Length: 79
Image (cartoon, rainbow, N blue to C red; front, top):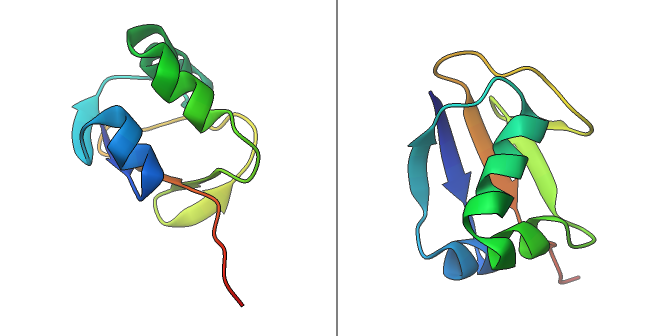
């Protein structure tokens, strides 16, 4: 199971900040979240959303190990 964290606006859309979800890869995890909650899937696919796996920013698909931490980060603003 991966520990999934949502931050900022993404947590508001999801209605939760932390959950454990079984998934073998980042693409599978995102697909499962999107199937469960289409509004969350749309928010995760928005431009500027970043993903960190085990505290390292990633892009594309990456495998997830049992106990991986996956954080979805909303676009940042400011100066």
